Length: 435
Length: 77
Image (cartoon, rainbow over all chains, first blue to last red; front, side, top):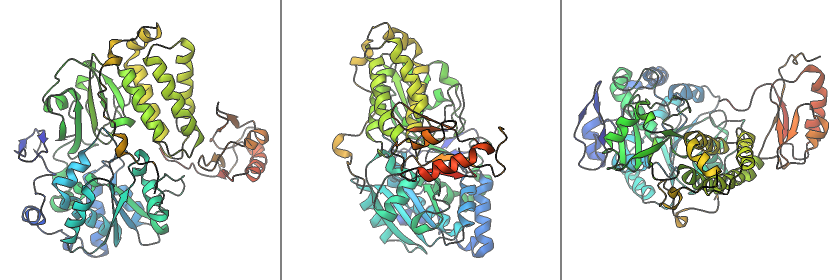
């Protein structure tokens, strides 16, 4: 039921409910892709009625956004289509999350499935223009440009190279970049679905979401629901990293248990203390207790764990989860757009407190201040960057509560001297500006 | 006294515009406090009727036009 997405590793997995992989069966080249999936089924959805049928198919399929928030895609399409002006579509392939590379892999392995999905999404909402957003400084943009040149689509494509900043992939930041050349998030309202690119209603969908749109248009909502759960149907891509034998991108069915996902990635190579689920806006799940936790886009378990954008990292028991978290929260603080006071000042303060906790320079007052600051920063930004960072910090304090006591007593664990497990981008691959 | 206003008006702040002048704290201490960095923490539940006029004054006095009075919450979660 789980399949590696690497070249040559596509042998079909016959799962409990259906066959995976779905997203990768067609090949990289346009010819191979068309041989597998045929033409985009635009004729079947022609006219006003056809558009509505397509939105209904996506709604009936129960597809939820694969960019992290898990919002129902059909509902978003209906909202965008209901606007007064002609809508615009943004295909979001930025994937600024360091713990995730599923979108990059999907765009490399099945670019035309993503592009077909974007054309269909544009048709569904009545848009004639699609902005394809990818991080600059990678080869993906150039490759996509070449693939686009071979296609003859009824939409106008515009490839946008986005600054390599964590928050620039947020939907209002993409709108801001396209409108004003500034890749920082905007305050809401208005939200992009109301007023986005050029003041038009704007559908911002993750590239994996769009690939699923293409498959639903081709095979129907019933087929889509053959895998996954009732609330979270279809397959989903996850990036499994850390102390597993085969770190890679995998296609799984939501509802799969955390331990099964690790096993699918070859299993643990050393005892696992906790697993980070949902990337750097995600939560730590203590192991082995969390082995049976079912992974979906809904928040489940005592810590409100969700798949998010599918970044999963297994942390060895020998590593220090507090030190790992302190390091990532410092990175998130550096990645703040510095627009909102609580994020600008709060995240560095929280990162400093976490580092104090991790490196044994902590007293009960620091611990209390940390809790107070986390509460003070949460939900106080224009975007959700501070909320994601504080969710990660909160879950670390819960998941590593035992370690915390040791640290509080002034003992530094041996874990702090181990090499970090959570991936961070090289400084050379991070942009300073927002243009 | 504490009945909510009929329009369901809520005090909200655009955190990007806000630079922490804190005039809202002076004009409406009932609904505003400051965090440790001097930025306003605002209760966003609908205002009681007797505070609506004060809230309008605070909105008008905000030097960066960050404060607003609105019938719906800005962010759906």
